[in-house]
Image: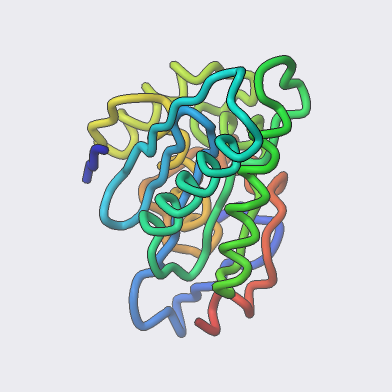
Length: 200
């Protein structure tokens, strides 16, 4: 594991000049993967790694997924909002069922802790980071390092940091200035009710 240190939105920002929050919002970004899930919080970025085999039994696959979920929730901690990357509809091959199960198990655990959840599609994540929804992960990694001054070891952590940054931007507390063309990606995110976030 490793750590590193004019708003466009489909709605009005939660934080206003007249009455801002008493403290910075606690937002987590989660990039779900069976092999390397990235989590970004105020404490930094973390990579949760796991390995499996094609011939693993149902019980072994269940145990693996549960272990990943437990580590993710531990890394997320107590937050006001979790921004999770949505599934890619173009994904083919690999362990599609297991990835989907992992995604839903994480979402279910967040819901059970009453943590509001935002779902950011992969193209929106790329657009927010680079201005181009078709950007590859390497470009997102480079953009995240440059904009946020973060030391990132891999693209999973970079994706998680971008997800966290998008959530903070939506709440009116951006990590850094982002061009309007990039910020337009916020309109493609499935956001929770603002009241659910601000009331925590």
